[in-house]
Amino acid sequence: MIFKSQHADIDIPESDLTSVVLSRVDELGDKAALIDGPTGRSLSYLQLREQVNRLAAGLHRRGFRKGDVFAIFIPNVPEYAVVFLGVAAIGGVNTTVNSLYSCADLIHQFNDSGARFLLTIPDFLDRALPAAEACGIEEIFVLGEAEGITPFSELLDNDGHAPVVEIDPKADLVALPYSSGTTGLSKGVMLTHENLISNMVLSCQSNPIDESDSAIGVLPFFHIYGMVLILNLSVYRGATLVTIPRFELEQFLQLVQDYKITNLNLVPPLVLALAKHPSVDNYDLSSVRIIGCGAAPLGEELEQACATRLNCLIYQGYGLTEVAGACHISPAVASKQKPGTVGPVLPNTLARIIDTETGADLGPNERGEVWVCGPHIMVGYLNNTEATAASIDAEGWYHTGDIGYADEDGYFYIVDRIKELIKYKGYQVAPAELEALLLSHSAIADAAVIPSPDEEAGEIPKAFVVLKQEISPEEIMKFVAEAVAPHKKIRKVEIVDEIPKSASGKILRRILVEKERKLRG
Image (cartoon, rainbow, N blue to C red; front, side):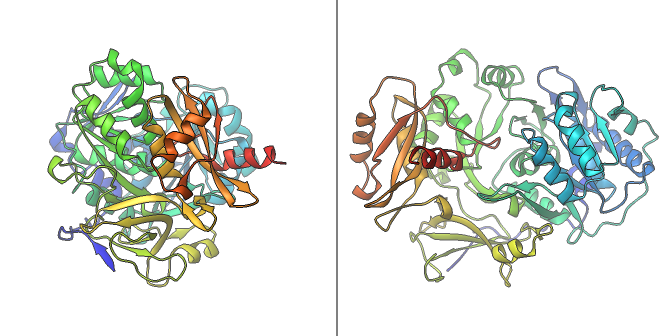
């Protein structure tokens, strides 16, 4: 069965990304496009366009040409938009770099992407410099000052007249983010102008943000969620985006209060904090009207707890780097809300549920692998035809590797990753389902569930739990056992200080799995 949107297809602009994102600048004029939260430094829409043009011209003067790769290794600041859109305008490709990457990670990405230039900040130079030297990066630019490094301001020191570059939005790449996947080295995801434009335009159907809104850029812009659905989408829709270089809960809450933020785009750990952290009561968050959550499954109880505490709407979406952002978004309308769902597919998008054993198409309320097809599907993985062929079939369907199902209304529910399912005596157990249940307990602050090897069962579910009140492992196991089928029971509990997570909020289960394997010898 093929699932599709109830809404008619939407016309996708046949243009380059920068032109589409900045299409309303003349109308918006001096309105603030981006504000650096901690300092209040801002860029108006007119200033943003001017700096984008100057950056494009500055790059061209240095011999940067269509198809060349520019590496962005900076935190969330207003300049991120200037660089990303400036590189795009001149026909270049942005490879966005994880702020937490080690020198070895940087070397892999710089070499694999073929990056010519690099932008970073002084605090990152201890990693960036040796990596750049090892990879033959031609020039490094720095936001701020660092001895022997070209200041970013020099790139903007020109008249802003860059040559017009012919861009084929369907064929020309604009972004090359790296997807870590679950194993091996990260892979470069080749995304075209059309991929990013499609995702922005189609997401607007369900993601109602406009010039009356203020959003907050707390999720990293190097990640596809922050890049497309926060940074580019906010500017495209005429909102004001407040950026935060580094997440700290108190500062985040203060900025939401001070700037009267209306739209929050979050990941489950931040929703968890808003639902449970005592500090939330110290701030006026009444301006928040809507919260979007993605990047990892969010349990129904936690979703409702957060919505109730902040008295706002909350909706979930589902996507991947390989689909340039989102492919499913739940309607942000109270009358159409279903807690726990990531919603129906976006317009112009098709989805299927496939039986992982037989390859057969499944219908409503049957669990299988989610496949997606649409104009936002990546070209493929850079320098990796084998991985591309394994994930995109001959008919253009992208095999997500995620397990989910759709209800009779076409609303999707994401259960877990295929590779992360626990096999207990032949039964499949989804860690995310048990994690959502654990987080509904008032004594539990955070949780992760992994497979633990077991001679009799093959694997058993083990929970790593962060407490906020005293409770014994036995009480935790009893709480879960009373709510789930016997094969889903948690059979081991370990109390820990924190759960390891990626910058985008995903639980790093592999770290816990490795720890468990070492423990068992």
